[in-house]
Image (cartoon, rainbow, N blue to C red; front, side):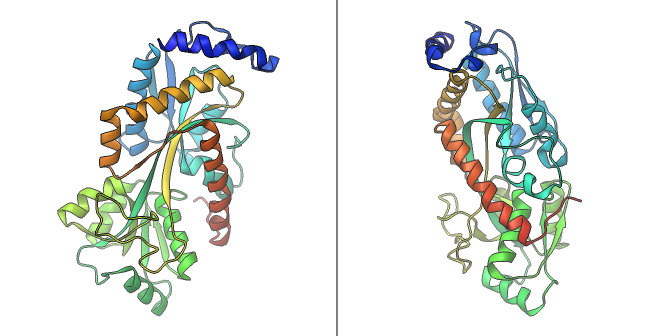
Length: 327
């Protein structure tokens, strides 16, 4: 059924420019071999888990294996570059993330790909808030407590992150900018060691993604001060937003979606976009994502492209104001 739908979509080729007619589009039975799904982060993280979850669905929907290939490094740049330089035939796609698509272009002196020109946004998969966490024995009971201490003793407080340029880090930089604070950033090589040191009190605070923060909140191992979305989470309605907590304009949502190389034929993009939207409507997938506190994505490739452009402009300003640079 999926293949017949693609053949029907391909009948629109007559209205497309000649340069789009070729590759996977010209093949009546796309796909006819395995598809590589590049994940630009290491195994076991959220990007990897989501890549495998959607890879399984796409494999069933398209009738060919979708093989997740982890290519971590350089803040997601290595894996994203592989997608950008692949043939636009639909056999190499990738998980596109917040950092490689909207932040790194402003943070690194040089990228070997252009997030706007060299990639095709296919479909947004999810957006997820973060939670400002402190150790359970911390003296800070509210965001206002943190602000007061940071202003009284500039540079003394520290915030951890899972690495430079990620949503953990940039949330802290936005907090500094909007509240006028001077705090020290402590980057780690991954969220797990950062959370371990946070629990041990080696750092004062951390913006943690909701899906990993939830177990620590429920078990009482860490204290949640505020959430980074505009509205409260149905999972933890008792946790105020950063805006409610006294930081106007504060909103951070970590996001990711399916991407491909630039130049993919429109019918091929439409086929993959349709498959992702159907995956988001799958009851099991939907339930798991909502239980993790994420917002479901979906929509058109144009919607995803608009998000990437807007986020790039927004985070470029934060990176420049705080002189954020790679190690």
